[in-house]
Image (cartoon, rainbow, N blue to C red; front, side, top):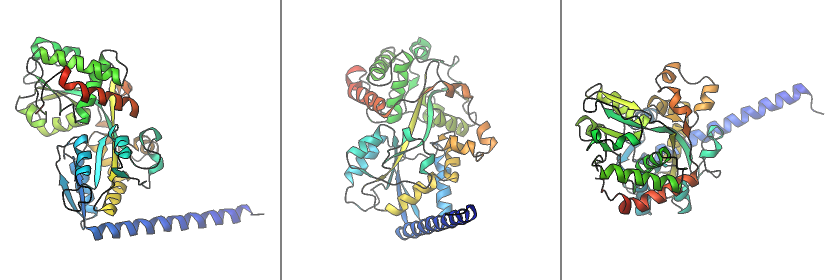
Length: 366
């Protein structure tokens, strides 16, 4: 029979040996990643979710690894196409890692475009936003909101239906092509839900109907909206994730003034996921990147960019989040109304929007 003391000593010994194995494994991963010497990312704008500072944090921690950034303004569909197009290519145009909308994770897995890897903090990632085998895993989320240049717009729209008003002529834009951009596709889901649609095919169809009405009214601007287009007055009203709009607002520093509002009705929460390319030229650097993103440092980097990181709840419970970061977030009321569509609902919405955009709306977003 094992005594309590003996059992305690055995447990302590086991924990110590486990820690040594994990430390040794991490040390080996770091050495292998440094030997590769490069990490190729894609579709990571520096003002998206605080990625600029997150990338700088990784580079500061691992100066031996060059970060090669491809096409920062690409959409989720573009990322998958980049993997398809570079199978067998070990050059600088082949992405190692992906950051895509939730619906694109299962698609990438089904096509064999990604490989499994579970980070050390895997257990703190909620089960409903990760593949059980580790092929993809949620990284952060935000809610759909409106960003408004108040120099040009006197009355800030408070709902999707408001966008039909004549006062918003040639004013409203999306952040990409709804046939390929996850953010734009989910903006239409938000629009459809505002009309009472259930997330899925119905939200996609209702969202297309509303966008067709906005376009017919002359209020839609078929331009990919960014902070620059807001500042220039080209797209005075933009539907985008709250964290993007808040970052743009900060970067504009009041020139022009910009207001961010979460529209009335259900708040659409959008989860993005990480994955490693099945054809990653630098697989160890890719794994080390994932370990960094899901470490406390990486998660706080996203939170500083106004995103709710995947480990947010666990880190709050553990007292790991500085109060100033919590205080900087928008009012909790908008998040209290948040609806988190399932992967299946997002896939159905995506199919409806991307498949019906040309025939229902017909605007070519540039």
